Amino acid sequence: MRVRVDPVKCQGYAVCGEVAPRHFTFDDWGFAQAKPVDIDLESMGAVEEAIQVCPVRAIRRIL
Ligand code: SF4
Image (cartoon, rainbow, N blue to C red):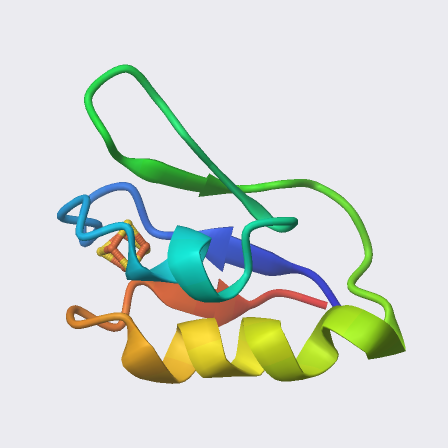
């Protein structure tokens, strides 16, 4: 599985980076991008939590 951050929806709350720091990076303005890597079993729980806690539901599963 991979995830993608919708750049229009993302408001830069950074909650995703707090719960799954290995899978999200932030640009100079504080908006998130998902790293383009497959999410391994070890990280799956944290990424699922990031999807759930994003206040604007900007994170989507893409694969
Ligand atoms: S938690 Fe959601 S709104 Fe906040 S930076 Fe991550 S994707 Fe963007």
